[in-house]
Amino acid sequence: MKILLLEDEVMLQGAVSEYLQMHNHRVDAFVDGAEALEAIMKGGYDLLILDINVPSIDGLSLLEQLNAAKLAVPAIFTSAQTDIAEISKAYELGCFDYLKKPFHLQELLLHINRVMRDVPPEQRKHLRLSKRYSYDMLNETLLFDNVPQTLTRRQHQIIDLLARNMNRVVDFETFRIYVWDEAIIDNATIRAEVNRLKKALKEDFIQNIRAMGYMIDGSLK
Image (cartoon, rainbow, N blue to C red; front, side, top):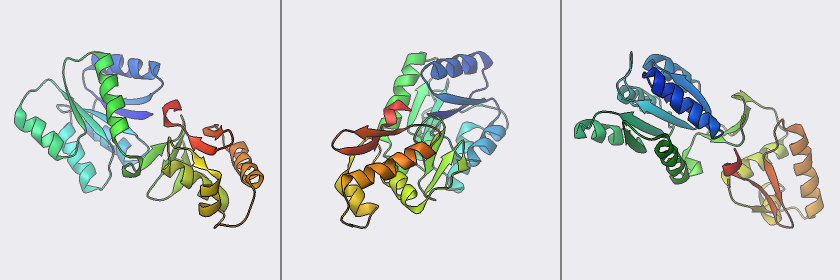
C-alpha cells in the first residue's frame, strides 16, 4: 500500500516510515504541509497519515483543500492535542481515524489495517493492485507507478472487473457476461485471454483460483 506521511517530528517520522516499510508499505514522508498537498494532488496514494500541527499548511486545512478539490483519500490524523473541537473538526472533514500521540507503532499499524478494511473499494479513487500497479476507478485506467498503461479493450475489461471485485473470486460465467457480452465461449478461451494479460503486466497480481476463476487478493500488495 502506498502511504503519505505528514509528520514534522523528525525522529517519529523516521521511526514510522521504517516500521511501515518493514510491513511492506511504500511511504513518502513530508514535514511540510504544502509539499505534502502538492504530492497528494498528483494522485496515487492509498492512505494519508497526517499530523495536525505542521509547517505551511496544517493537517486539517490540508484535508479541507482535498475536499474542495473532490479528491478523496482515506486519512488518519495524529496529534498530541486532546482538544475535542479539533478532534470533532477532523471527523467532520472526513478523517477515518484519530490517533493521540504518543502511540505505539504496532497500534498505528492496527489502525491502518482497520481503516483499509472498512473503506469499501468502490469509495476509493485509486485501488492499489500490487506494489507498483494501481487502478483509477474514476477514469477506469490502469496505472504503473502512476503512469497510465495501454491495454486492449478486452484486457481493460478484465482489469476493471477484477478491480471492482477486489478480494472476491470472479467466476468464468461473470467473465462471459461482462467481458464477452454473454457470448458462448469455453473456459479455455477466457484462460488464454487472462494469460495474455498476465504476460503483458510487469507484476503478477492476478491469481488463478483453480476450477473457479480469477481474483486480485488485496492482502498480498
